[in-house]
Length: 157
Picture 1 (cartoon, rainbow, N blue to C red):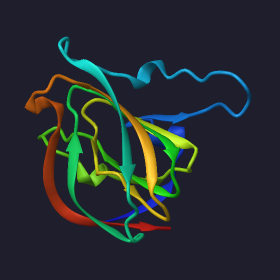
Picture 2 (tube, one colour):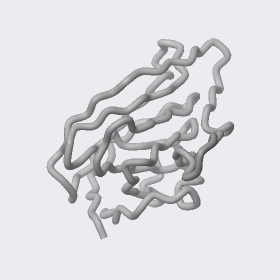
Picture 3 (cartoon, rainbow, N blue to C red):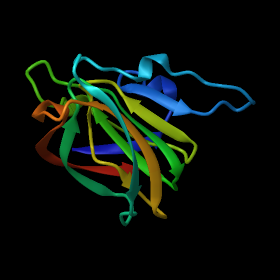
Picture 4 (spheres, rainbow, N blue to C red):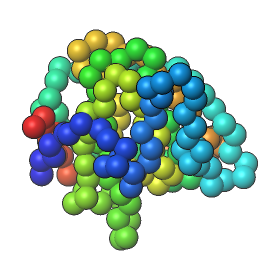
């Protein structure tokens, strides 16, 4: 299987979550639907993440992860080009690779995955990246599930 990464837009990403982006004009942009928590004992956590760049596309994806009960939000502080790979949860369980999509956000765009959205790990290109990450955690195995998938390739158009 091969996915072609395309530019990230709010409309295309909507089934998987929200594109988190500062407004173009002075003021605030609210993302009320971006923070989802389906467990009453889970607590909000925020952390900073530093990622080193990988070579470039094409890239082979061998695992996907999900956070069944929590959204997960990535807000770039400093970033070059980066990759977002997502898939919905299949009715029979696991990621639905037939409906997987790949996106290339700009340096000004973040993402907030809805609970139960399958996604790859974070891949950055060109330069090291720093991001703020927000998620609800209860320190149980339900915080994160990582599964192997039939390897597939992500390419640029």
